[in-house]
Length: 115
View 1 (spheres, rainbow, N blue to C red):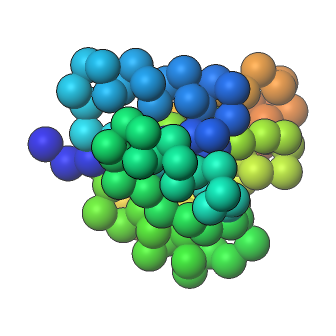
View 2 (tube, one colour; view 1 turned 180 degrees about the horizontal axis):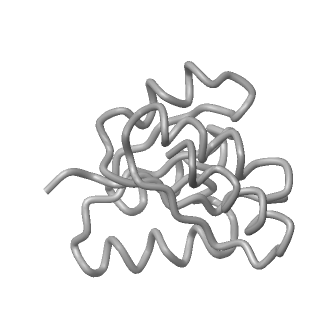
């Protein structure tokens, strides 16, 4: 089974999801921009990890290209959802997030025609 990536894994919700994935034996890769927060969690859970931020589209794509999906947990989604979603489209992997922000739903819905 191909892995999926949890971006923002060291945040409150991302960490809960990471712990549940580990408990259920799911092939998760933890990711985020801060190695001081991601690395200890990844080591504790014995899961692989990647460090990157969302300012470089090519770097995002190279970090997710071997994943079947990205679960995006890093807000504020009004700023972070579109770069990650566009990278997922370019890399050919599925995008999911945990936002509850209506403007983000609308922005991502507008990307549907491109996907």
